[in-house]
Length: 91
Image (cartoon, rainbow, N blue to C red):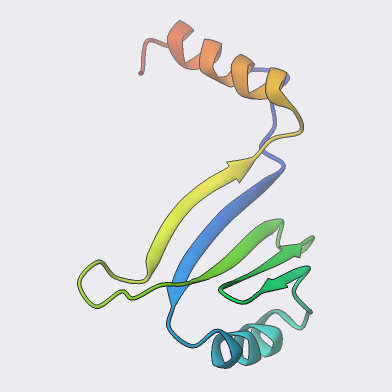
């Protein structure tokens, strides 16, 4: 997988009260979100290299974790990572 680099990790959490969650994460990250909608907000942080999003959804039974992911620089890097996994026979 040489030549590929994960640019930024991504964490998405569910929340029930976006404004309260935004107050907390503004203080936690010391940063403003890059995007806010009625049911969604996203922080694009440089340090740590993280995309962090909040999604307004109920989570009583499913928990607060919505999804985890990573950002690459481009599609070719994603495809190269996939080829590396095949070559390593791990997936």
